[in-house]
Image (cartoon, rainbow, N blue to C red):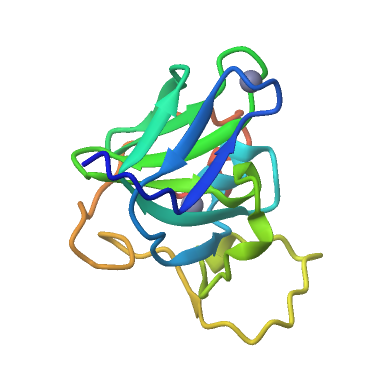
Length: 158
Ligand SMILES: [Zn+2]
Ligand SMILES: [Zn+2]
């Protein structure tokens, strides 16, 4: 841990939280799942797997479910990452990187929740949210702690 090479840097809007990545970035995906939509206030979350992330300024964390935390700046609110519980990796928000264009997404995930007006003709493979995640090695049931407004619950199974 704590290598000397920096593979990526980034941070929040206000600068209270900065980070650097000390290992090569992993796979990037665009996650359309309902929980990522809600966590980012966006149509999807562009994420890239990162290990060896060193923070300067402590990010806030919300346990959005029993299997993951969502990291953010406690001062300006910028969403920064998704962190599976018990993993040494986090999924960084690509938009929080100083050079988001340097990361090339490899796939779409959670496409069962993709908003109807979004048309991305990028030819990337598409996957539905599946038990255990993409690897199939995660838990098969997830208890969400996100607030789901009454009426919306019937449309969301997670
Ligand atoms: Zn901030
Ligand atoms: Zn997601």
